[in-house]
Length: 224
Image 1 (tube, rainbow, N blue to C red):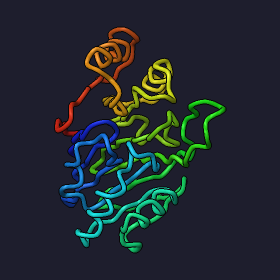
Image 2 (image 1 turned 120 degrees about the horizontal axis):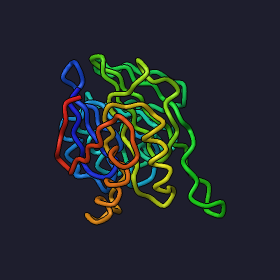
Image 3 (image 1 turned 120 degrees about the vertical axis):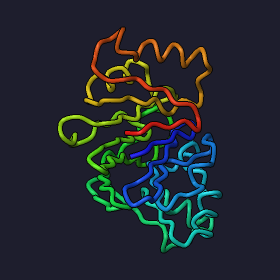
């Protein structure tokens, strides 16, 4: 499985049958994730995770492309002109077969920003398994996967910045979910100074652990 980071919370995966899966192509990503995407997964409807117009345009102009996400995502895309037959709502507990990959849907709750903020959207998580490898995208949450294949993920995508989180929560998640590689996401608000600080705290040399912390910049890839 080949992973490419596209900025903020967006990554793409090359699947066993050669298909391309894009996760959370939002307004802070570089847009390249959609170039060859035959499948799209979206965790929730916030603009930094779903930019409706370009995604709807992609679905209109690529007859083989399909998208899965919570009901609010489906509503946003159909309102933007996406063909209704190419978008499908998912809920926690669903299992999908996409391009030779098994995708398990979990989560359901966006992390709270503040008790006085308006209600937050449903946030689902995705556990993707392909070629004996596994990757987990939690969206805007630190909800752990219900099951860790083989007792250890290959890649944990870890949110590291946002109005709903504390760095302590990111540290706890990195230490509590067994993974070979931790890739920081949800980093669009960080400067280089901020990235350096986060990297120092999450590096295993400071806090222990047996994962590799691998920051990627937009366009960079790694083979899982």
